[in-house]
Image (cartoon, rainbow, N blue to C red):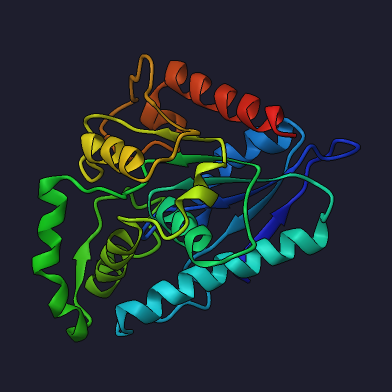
Length: 259
């Protein structure tokens, strides 16, 4: 299955949240955030971008189509299951990029509100260097993953998936339907020290596309437990208790405002 419905125990749900993970992450990496949402009265649809997706030898365009199709199927399932509830999106990294591309490609689907964590719509200079390697993807070469073993889907990330991610970055650089996306109240969480996502580039992207209801947010008092990296922001230990509390309280309040 490409999506798992996790329902709240409360008598009636406030809304349904589509939750999407990042590149080469297990879908379960989002479970801590899902737990907060479910406890707060939201149903969640946890999306997996890798189940039923093409393998590492696939053409990048085929991979991007599969990612969008997986999200489209999850959205349709959510709509069928809870047609009268508000729909929200909570997406991280590649999941956020795929969510943006899905909304910009499909005509009808939309969300009442969104929270996007570290969306790679603009990359750092060092992260952009992977472009030079992507032609080797046809040989099914994978780069070692820096993600902790507990959260990564595989030991390495195929270059074809990096190429697919970069294809999405290029496609959304100038949005086809900025007026549609711009009407969705959206918070974008960024870390200036993110190794992959270019902070200034994301701010410029928001401005260029006229996304008036999109607001960048940062973390107050980020104090990770042990060694981690700045791009990882979906686990409490990667943020520390103060920043995690700020993030989760904001997400719940932001979605409740639209529920």
